[in-house]
Amino acid sequence: MIFIKTNRLLLRNFQSEDLDTLFNYRNDLNCSKYQRWENSSLEYLESLIQKNKPLKILDKKTLQLAIAMNSTNKIVGDVYIGFKNKTITLGYTIASKYQRKGYAYEMLRSLIDYVFDTFPQHEIVCMVHPDNEPSLQLLKKLNFKDEGYEKSIESIVYSLS
Image 1: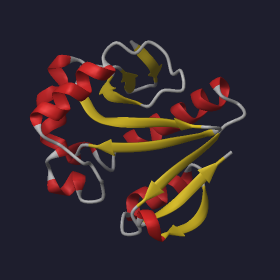
Image 2 (image 1 turned 60 degrees about the vertical axis):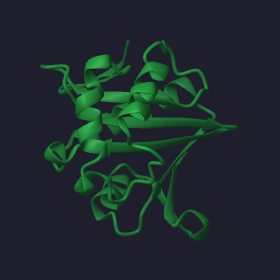
Image 3 (image 1 turned 180 degrees about the horizontal axis):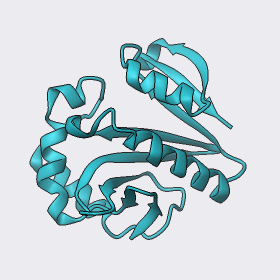
Image 4 (image 1 turned 30 degrees about the horizontal axis):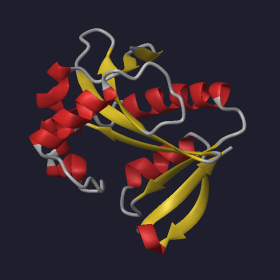
């Protein structure tokens, strides 16, 4: 299922053929150095794909979706969407070879619009490692508000409402 389509990208369910690419960038130290994945084994990622494949709507469940190229359907990253009360947490990863090409901005801009259209009473938050300068700049460009450093999660919290 395609949730969002932009000029270059699709936000869609994972597919079985995404496994190798997902495994490769989740285990790339340049890509994962600011992430806090508990597990990036092949078995875990395969179960993640299977769990998220059948999702048809954003319905206040935690989910992980693939960011894929429109032209090839090849994944370039993924997005985490978590719901808790009136707060939606977004997390995103772009594979190293696709970073700094505007893909995260393009997808997040569309996803933010989609979220606020679908859940107008909600707030969006993102947590970013303080050394992840590209992500900090991205959230500022998207008009997120810096809520400060939260020691318990070792992250800067950004919000948008």
